[in-house]
Image (cartoon, rainbow, N blue to C red):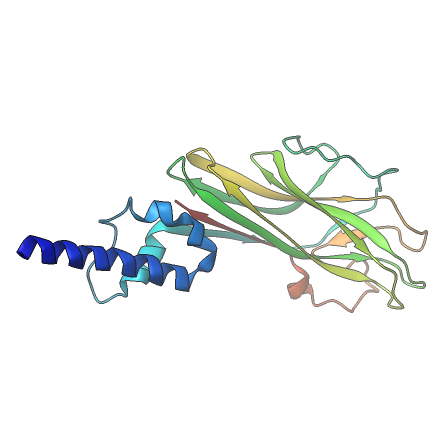
Length: 220
């Protein structure tokens, strides 16, 4: 009878961990297969067990740009981006972070936020650009952005790109952020700046808020 009671208690405890973890971070609901493999990872102390479990299997990494990168060259036609290719034709935005992976079975969530601005000082204009996420110098994700013309001078665009990458090899990996200017849509601007103002005459951006922010979360 004692053995049966203990087994029932153990079963209830395992269910509590899975349910609590899902409530704290729904993104990792798909990681439940990992949970049963770490039965001894939760310390029995005053810390909430579900929070301790969360901290034990996830790690966070981040980086932030310190200055704007201004690009004045534009491609003649829109490139055909190929995943796995190198950074030829791209410009590094001085934003990177190194992530570490201990197990071959893992999930990494990588996200980039930032601002792009053109130096249209007199007339409105549309513009377009692309942001790429590179891991170990290989293109892993890319997103094109098109900004419609507005009456505002020094037009800008807040951009976001995020991706989930599964089963990176164990070890360290370097994540970098790149950009490329897509073909010009008018002659009313001469450059696109990433992470800051496109001109000293542009004062409609908060420099700190315009910075490029790279974040990565690894779950194993």
